[in-house]
Length: 75
Image 1 (cartoon, one colour):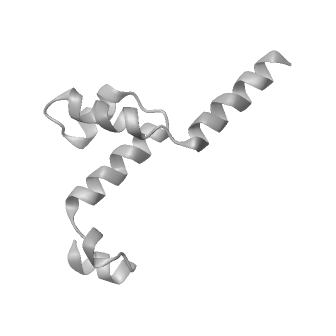
Image 2: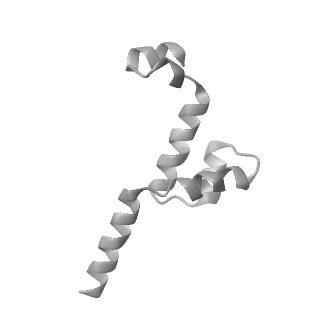
């Protein structure tokens, strides 16, 4: 991970697998995958761990997409 991170230009303090796992979890949740599916994909033993990401990682882009869908539904 450290070698690939260096090649990719990732800052040294972020070149470890926990950051990769964190990014994957946030990305999957932001793409609308259910918490249970993300838990299984990431390998969290307890769904509470995945839920922490779900609470903290709902992105502005996802909220914007939801708002756009609601506006289109009202037209």
